[in-house]
Image (cartoon, rainbow, N blue to C red; front, side):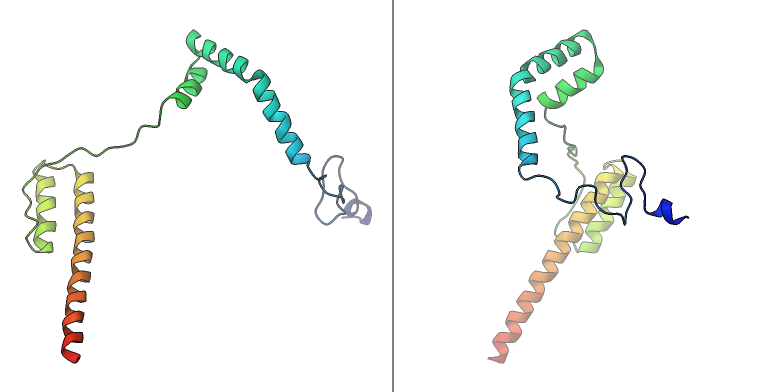
Length: 145
């Protein structure tokens, strides 16, 4: 690269390493003024724009219809279906977990929900283990006193 091409920049494009084309930076309040112009335009023309989009949606424009519906209806949240199968919560954790794949294999529980149930059993197991350790620790501390 020649010395001349390294110190010049193409029109309209800043090249890293060269002096800033705007050394003073953005003027104070420029962003606020821009935001005010946008708000003013929305207040003035917003209802007309909304009416045009609704009219287009009513004419069958699917993009406009999607825009209108996305603003009028809340997003649909996934909800798990309720399941019923033989499950004994008093059994040891290992036996509880064994019951879930058996229910999946029998077609009583969908596989994705079976995985969620196993995860819940694991969380319950961790909570029980923590409680048992706390009880043991309390007993040992009481003996030490």
